Image 1 (cartoon, rainbow, N blue to C red):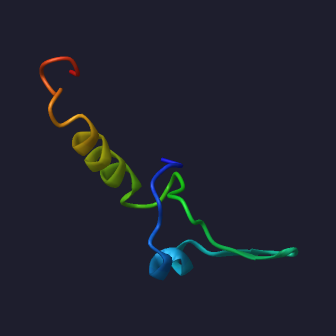
Image 2 (cartoon, rainbow, N blue to C red; image 1 turned 180 degrees about the horizontal axis):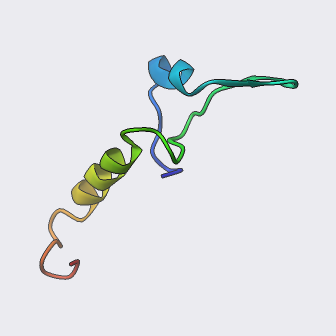
Image 3 (tube, rainbow, N blue to C red; image 1 turned 60 degrees about the vertical axis):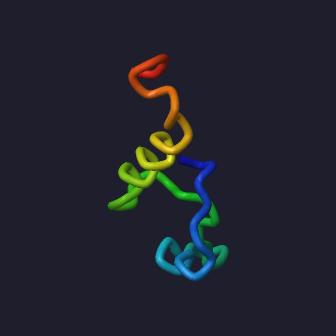
Length: 56
């Protein structure tokens, strides 16, 4: 998860505020509504030639 970048124009959607300031994620955090699907798509692309051969 923490290796998948969030587009700069979408980082504001991950912003949160604390007493120390406002922060936004640059890499995909756990818990976003589509983070699981995005991670699965990245894994499918990474292992494209290996699915059902080496990777189950």
